[in-house]
Length: 179
Ligand code: IMP
Ligand code: MG
Image (cartoon, rainbow, N blue to C red):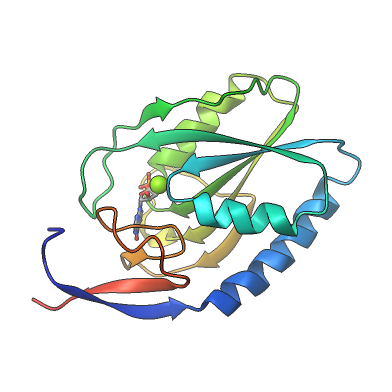
């Protein structure tokens, strides 16, 4: 699959992403006003650019931590089996936690991760995803904040990969196979 030739059609420009993140950051600041520290948890690896841009827009006291969850393989189909490959470094019990994810597709990854973190009894637990593909949902999951809803297309860029490629594109593009 990953050795097939493809081109990338631009879907969401870097400028639109930046503008949307500014808006989301203002909503997040308002929501957490009065909270003295927020733990921002990025899901590796796809969220690394989104979380970097998001936290630089947040005018509040934050800590950053990461968790890595993976489904198997390099396929465009998400596996149902979610494994934790790398857990948080810090404890989240009694703390305010915001989980940052690149994209919600079937919903398996985020529902699993949120369930796992909720069991650690944070003071609050919310989520933000850059992209949502609601048409592909298999288990119920709705993020508290969403960047963009997109159609059922395989996308890359802005941290998101296809078989580990194209994460460094500054925009979101959709993969179109040419053979
Ligand atoms: P879910 O568990 O099916 O919701 O899948 C979420 C994960 O699948 C995301 O964190 C991505 O790593 C991956 N994924 C889903 N859709 C895409 C896509 O269009 N491009 C690249 N990765 C994707
Ligand atoms: Mg991912």
